Image (cartoon, rainbow, N blue to C red; front, side, top):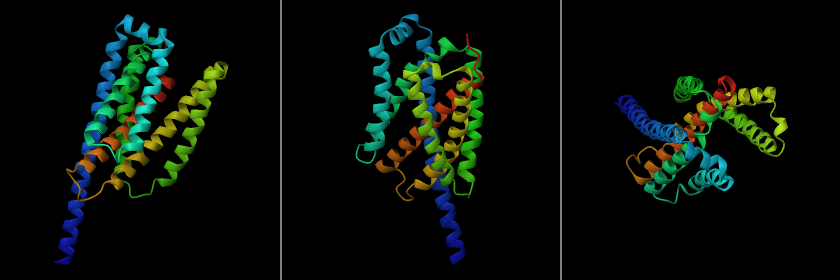
Length: 236
Protein backbone atom coordinates (compact mmCIF):
# COMPACT_ATOMS: atom_id res chain seq x y z
CA UNK A 1 0.00 0.00 0.00
CA UNK A 2 2.79 2.41 0.89
CA UNK A 3 4.58 1.62 -2.36
CA UNK A 4 1.37 2.24 -4.31
CA UNK A 5 0.74 5.57 -2.59
CA UNK A 6 4.33 6.68 -3.14
CA UNK A 7 4.13 5.77 -6.84
CA UNK A 8 0.86 7.58 -7.17
CA UNK A 9 2.31 10.63 -5.43
CA UNK A 10 5.30 10.67 -7.79
CA UNK A 11 2.96 10.37 -10.74
CA UNK A 12 0.86 13.27 -9.44
CA UNK A 13 3.95 15.45 -9.07
CA UNK A 14 5.09 14.52 -12.57
CA UNK A 15 1.69 15.42 -14.02
CA UNK A 16 1.61 18.77 -12.21
CA UNK A 17 5.11 19.58 -13.45
CA UNK A 18 4.02 18.67 -16.98
CA UNK A 19 1.03 21.02 -16.77
CA UNK A 20 3.24 23.78 -15.38
CA UNK A 21 5.82 23.42 -18.16
CA UNK A 22 3.04 23.26 -20.73
CA UNK A 23 1.93 26.70 -19.52
CA UNK A 24 5.50 27.99 -19.70
CA UNK A 25 5.90 26.80 -23.28
CA UNK A 26 2.51 28.21 -24.24
CA UNK A 27 3.37 31.71 -23.02
CA UNK A 28 6.88 31.51 -24.45
CA UNK A 29 5.44 30.55 -27.85
CA UNK A 30 2.86 33.32 -27.68
CA UNK A 31 5.62 35.85 -26.97
CA UNK A 32 7.66 34.61 -29.94
CA UNK A 33 4.62 34.74 -32.23
CA UNK A 34 3.88 38.30 -31.07
CA UNK A 35 7.50 39.34 -31.67
CA UNK A 36 7.55 37.69 -35.10
CA UNK A 37 4.29 39.32 -36.19
CA UNK A 38 5.31 42.82 -35.10
CA UNK A 39 8.81 42.40 -36.54
CA UNK A 40 7.52 41.36 -39.95
CA UNK A 41 4.75 43.98 -39.99
CA UNK A 42 7.12 46.83 -39.14
CA UNK A 43 9.70 45.62 -41.68
CA UNK A 44 7.11 46.06 -44.44
CA UNK A 45 6.69 49.75 -43.63
CA UNK A 46 9.52 51.99 -44.82
CA UNK A 47 8.14 54.82 -42.68
CA UNK A 48 8.26 52.81 -39.45
CA UNK A 49 11.70 51.38 -40.19
CA UNK A 50 13.05 54.82 -41.01
CA UNK A 51 11.54 56.16 -37.82
CA UNK A 52 13.34 53.53 -35.74
CA UNK A 53 16.77 53.69 -37.36
CA UNK A 54 16.62 57.37 -38.26
CA UNK A 55 15.96 58.64 -34.75
CA UNK A 56 18.58 57.71 -32.16
CA UNK A 57 16.30 58.70 -29.29
CA UNK A 58 13.64 56.26 -30.45
CA UNK A 59 16.10 53.45 -31.20
CA UNK A 60 17.98 53.66 -27.93
CA UNK A 61 14.74 54.40 -26.10
CA UNK A 62 13.38 51.06 -27.33
CA UNK A 63 16.52 49.25 -26.18
CA UNK A 64 16.39 50.89 -22.75
CA UNK A 65 12.68 50.08 -22.44
CA UNK A 66 13.42 46.42 -23.26
CA UNK A 67 16.15 46.19 -20.64
CA UNK A 68 13.94 47.99 -18.13
CA UNK A 69 11.08 45.56 -18.68
CA UNK A 70 13.32 42.52 -18.16
CA UNK A 71 15.04 43.90 -15.07
CA UNK A 72 11.77 45.11 -13.55
CA UNK A 73 10.02 41.79 -14.06
CA UNK A 74 13.02 39.88 -12.70
CA UNK A 75 13.21 42.09 -9.60
CA UNK A 76 9.49 42.45 -8.90
CA UNK A 77 8.02 39.15 -10.04
CA UNK A 78 7.39 38.05 -6.44
CA UNK A 79 5.60 41.24 -5.42
CA UNK A 80 3.54 42.26 -8.46
CA UNK A 81 0.34 40.55 -9.60
CA UNK A 82 0.30 37.86 -12.26
CA UNK A 83 -1.67 40.23 -14.52
CA UNK A 84 1.05 42.88 -14.22
CA UNK A 85 3.74 40.28 -14.92
CA UNK A 86 1.88 39.13 -18.02
CA UNK A 87 1.48 42.68 -19.34
CA UNK A 88 5.19 43.44 -18.82
CA UNK A 89 6.16 40.20 -20.56
CA UNK A 90 3.94 40.92 -23.57
CA UNK A 91 5.19 44.52 -23.67
CA UNK A 92 8.76 43.25 -23.79
CA UNK A 93 7.90 40.83 -26.61
CA UNK A 94 6.27 43.68 -28.56
CA UNK A 95 9.26 46.00 -28.05
CA UNK A 96 11.60 43.23 -29.17
CA UNK A 97 9.52 42.89 -32.32
CA UNK A 98 10.10 46.55 -33.09
CA UNK A 99 13.89 46.32 -32.79
CA UNK A 100 14.14 42.92 -34.51
CA UNK A 101 12.38 44.33 -37.55
CA UNK A 102 15.75 45.78 -38.52
CA UNK A 103 17.17 42.33 -39.31
CA UNK A 104 15.05 42.36 -42.48
CA UNK A 105 17.22 45.23 -43.69
CA UNK A 106 20.38 43.18 -43.21
CA UNK A 107 19.46 39.60 -44.09
CA UNK A 108 17.34 38.03 -46.82
CA UNK A 109 13.88 36.80 -45.86
CA UNK A 110 14.83 33.25 -46.88
CA UNK A 111 17.83 33.12 -44.54
CA UNK A 112 15.77 34.59 -41.67
CA UNK A 113 13.13 31.92 -42.21
CA UNK A 114 15.76 29.15 -42.37
CA UNK A 115 17.47 30.39 -39.20
CA UNK A 116 14.12 30.54 -37.40
CA UNK A 117 13.19 26.97 -38.38
CA UNK A 118 16.62 25.66 -37.35
CA UNK A 119 16.33 27.53 -34.05
CA UNK A 120 12.88 26.06 -33.38
CA UNK A 121 14.08 22.47 -33.90
CA UNK A 122 17.31 23.04 -31.94
CA UNK A 123 15.48 24.70 -29.08
CA UNK A 124 12.92 21.87 -28.90
CA UNK A 125 15.64 19.23 -28.66
CA UNK A 126 17.73 21.14 -26.12
CA UNK A 127 14.74 21.98 -23.94
CA UNK A 128 13.51 18.38 -24.06
CA UNK A 129 16.94 17.23 -22.92
CA UNK A 130 16.86 19.69 -20.03
CA UNK A 131 13.39 18.51 -19.10
CA UNK A 132 14.05 14.76 -19.01
CA UNK A 133 17.70 14.48 -17.96
CA UNK A 134 18.52 13.45 -14.41
CA UNK A 135 21.98 14.97 -14.65
CA UNK A 136 22.57 18.20 -12.75
CA UNK A 137 23.10 20.91 -15.36
CA UNK A 138 24.11 23.50 -12.76
CA UNK A 139 27.81 23.53 -13.73
CA UNK A 140 26.87 24.03 -17.39
CA UNK A 141 24.56 26.89 -16.45
CA UNK A 142 27.25 28.55 -14.35
CA UNK A 143 29.82 28.32 -17.14
CA UNK A 144 27.36 29.63 -19.74
CA UNK A 145 26.39 32.59 -17.56
CA UNK A 146 30.04 33.51 -17.07
CA UNK A 147 30.69 33.20 -20.81
CA UNK A 148 27.59 35.30 -21.52
CA UNK A 149 29.03 38.21 -19.53
CA UNK A 150 32.12 37.95 -21.70
CA UNK A 151 29.96 38.19 -24.82
CA UNK A 152 28.09 41.17 -23.41
CA UNK A 153 31.37 42.91 -22.57
CA UNK A 154 32.73 42.37 -26.07
CA UNK A 155 29.43 43.54 -27.57
CA UNK A 156 29.61 46.79 -25.59
CA UNK A 157 33.21 47.32 -26.72
CA UNK A 158 32.19 47.03 -30.38
CA UNK A 159 29.75 49.91 -29.91
CA UNK A 160 32.67 52.23 -29.14
CA UNK A 161 35.18 50.42 -31.36
CA UNK A 162 33.24 49.02 -34.35
CA UNK A 163 36.44 47.88 -36.03
CA UNK A 164 36.67 45.05 -33.47
CA UNK A 165 33.72 43.28 -35.09
CA UNK A 166 35.53 41.99 -38.15
CA UNK A 167 34.05 39.25 -40.34
CA UNK A 168 36.04 36.62 -38.47
CA UNK A 169 35.16 38.06 -35.07
CA UNK A 170 31.50 38.11 -36.05
CA UNK A 171 31.60 34.40 -36.89
CA UNK A 172 33.33 33.55 -33.61
CA UNK A 173 30.81 35.73 -31.77
CA UNK A 174 28.00 33.81 -33.44
CA UNK A 175 29.52 30.41 -32.60
CA UNK A 176 29.96 31.44 -28.96
CA UNK A 177 26.34 32.61 -28.90
CA UNK A 178 25.07 29.30 -30.26
CA UNK A 179 27.06 27.31 -27.70
CA UNK A 180 26.14 29.55 -24.76
CA UNK A 181 22.42 29.75 -25.46
CA UNK A 182 22.23 26.06 -26.30
CA UNK A 183 23.61 25.32 -22.85
CA UNK A 184 21.35 27.89 -21.21
CA UNK A 185 18.26 26.47 -22.94
CA UNK A 186 18.83 23.03 -21.41
CA UNK A 187 19.89 24.45 -18.04
CA UNK A 188 17.03 26.94 -17.76
CA UNK A 189 14.47 24.28 -18.66
CA UNK A 190 15.73 22.06 -15.87
CA UNK A 191 15.85 24.98 -13.44
CA UNK A 192 12.32 26.15 -14.28
CA UNK A 193 10.94 22.63 -13.90
CA UNK A 194 12.65 22.13 -10.53
CA UNK A 195 11.53 25.55 -9.27
CA UNK A 196 7.86 24.73 -9.71
CA UNK A 197 6.19 24.74 -6.29
CA UNK A 198 4.09 21.61 -6.07
CA UNK A 199 0.63 22.23 -4.64
CA UNK A 200 0.13 25.85 -5.68
CA UNK A 201 -1.27 25.06 -9.12
CA UNK A 202 -3.79 27.65 -10.27
CA UNK A 203 -2.72 30.30 -7.75
CA UNK A 204 -1.50 33.78 -8.59
CA UNK A 205 2.01 32.72 -7.53
CA UNK A 206 1.88 29.79 -9.94
CA UNK A 207 0.85 32.06 -12.81
CA UNK A 208 3.75 34.42 -12.05
CA UNK A 209 6.16 31.47 -12.04
CA UNK A 210 4.79 30.48 -15.43
CA UNK A 211 5.28 33.94 -16.93
CA UNK A 212 8.79 34.30 -15.53
CA UNK A 213 9.72 30.86 -16.85
CA UNK A 214 8.29 31.83 -20.25
CA UNK A 215 10.38 35.02 -20.28
CA UNK A 216 13.54 33.06 -19.47
CA UNK A 217 13.05 30.56 -22.29
CA UNK A 218 11.91 33.33 -24.64
CA UNK A 219 15.24 35.11 -24.09
CA UNK A 220 17.13 31.88 -24.76
CA UNK A 221 15.18 31.29 -27.98
CA UNK A 222 15.59 34.82 -29.35
CA UNK A 223 19.32 34.95 -28.60
CA UNK A 224 19.88 31.48 -30.04
CA UNK A 225 18.04 32.60 -33.17
CA UNK A 226 20.15 35.74 -33.52
CA UNK A 227 23.35 33.75 -33.05
CA UNK A 228 22.34 31.21 -35.71
CA UNK A 229 21.29 34.04 -38.04
CA UNK A 230 24.67 35.71 -37.55
CA UNK A 231 26.37 32.47 -38.59
CA UNK A 232 24.22 31.30 -41.50
CA UNK A 233 22.30 34.43 -42.53
CA UNK A 234 22.76 35.64 -46.09
CA UNK A 235 23.17 39.40 -46.21
CA UNK A 236 21.41 41.56 -48.76
